[in-house]
Image (cartoon, rainbow, N blue to C red; front, top):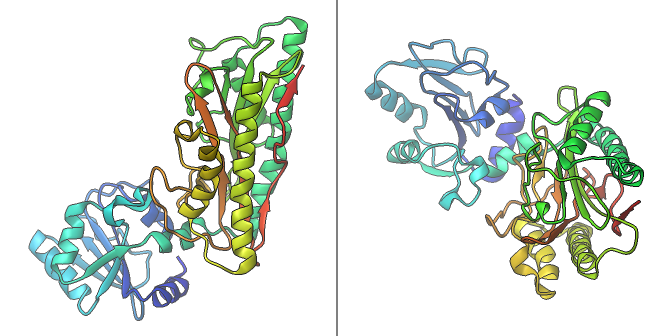
Length: 394
């Protein structure tokens, strides 16, 4: 935990302190911010108060008195709920704005882990509870140079595996051999292992024709079909290096199994998502070039407008992109004004996907995904190749 940096951010935000809290291991964010072991079970409530200025305060239950011993600050204990409330009252005395893992109106549910009753309790002590979402982004989603290098290295490996996967489809179809969606997915997972990559148990999406019209289609031995001529193909794959602090890399590419040209409708929806992806990236680059604020929901709007203008708006059924970090869906700003309205700003040091999609039920789907990183100098960069046209398989 970097106490000086946390207090500097609190002062900059005009917040009197950050109240971190957990019960029964419900808030992994708190453990990561504080550098605690999330694997150790928490049977009683603990609280850690980081004021904008001054010494932190640890509050633990007498059954688990050493829970917070590794953290700096004065230690206090409680036994009864009456003692708990009195200790909290004393600890928060004079505090106005108190940040917690809370989001007004559940606008950003990814960081809203504190239950409503606990928020009520803190409010009853005379505090205004505000969201810690921006603090969480700063301490959870801003990537250092080593993390970014790991992202780039993973990207080189995953781009290569993606190309090999399309080549494998072509080879099997050309030779008249059977290869199913599930078998190719498992082959990709084995290649991850060979390349020292970890997908953390969340396997790639491999789908043909109507299958990827379900954006989170999961191939299984029972539902998989064989690859064959005339099919549209979508491959979405993500992984990170097997090393501490490694950052995920996540891309989606589309192709068509020849011979011949892809159907005009497939070309149309792919080119639309490609153009929407490019519009979103251009929007971010323009904002940063001008030194203007750029929020997640605004980027989603810029992307979605391209699809809506072409009449496919109802078929773009998810947010434009997600935060990327040590987990594939990180705790930074998401590119979203559909599922949520993410008003957090894009800031230097964050990584996120841009992945518009069009999903035609019972027919076909197209999605194009890139990973965007904002350097400390405010340069908006993309790691790896950006798909411009359908992969011709065969």
